[in-house]
Image 1 (tube, rainbow, N blue to C red):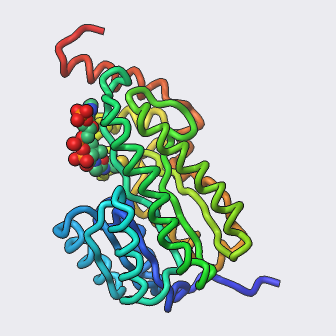
Image 2 (cartoon, protein in one colour):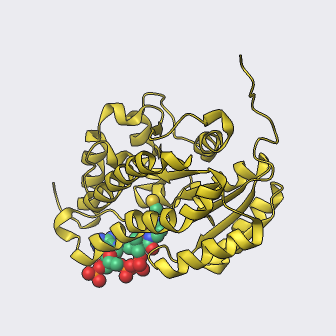
Length: 277
Ligand code: COA
């Protein structure tokens, strides 16, 4: 018998915590969760971004907690998670979304550059998941990781990001396996090319939109709400038996591989250096 239907109050009384929640996809997820009744904690590196994010999430109906915390700093993340729990109540949905990216040929990425992205994306996700564990155990809540298409197939000039995103998906699966016994679910969401995000700006921006559309079976860029709505679904009881899943919200983009992107971005990099390819 079907007993649970989506309700506009599906997350009433719930608390979400989102790393990198002051902008982009993570902010859109915060707004979607707020529309379903959740209160939302966000952390990020700059107070200005967090303040701007706070206003938008509040406008969607939530009480909002903010904390300046770089996900690379495990103590700062632990403090933010504890303070969020004290301010809003125990966290029931933790989104490990903070990410860093730049486009560069593998030979031009310094060890520090590689390490920086792995520290933000992968280590930062572990810091947040680990810090949220006790609260999630209390609420029998769930974790959502924001992965990337680079986790499925190699994208040229994204060696550092691919390593980090593949690590995130493996971490997600491991936590789903280990923490299921506490009633904690863990899943990844894999956004495709989402228009208007900093990530897209770093990967060619509006100039690359035609390329992305050409390599996406649905023939369009994704919208912030395409991703946020799936994230919100995963937070609700409607997803109560989904754990360990890597869910692509990419218009089918990864079905086609990355070859069109590789050629186009390579030509753009060469052109910016004035080199013939
Ligand atoms: N090509 C090659 N190396 C690069 C680079 C590029 N375009 N951009 C940064 N790096 C390297 C730096 O040179 C440095 O290494 P080095 O000291 O050996 O030269 C290393 O990366 C760290 O850079 P730094 O600017 O000191 O780090 P940061 O902590 O200030 O910034 C980044 C982190 C590099 C990930 C930055 O892009 C960022 O802040 N991103 C956050 C936002 C974002 O990327 N959003 C999109 C998410 S999809």
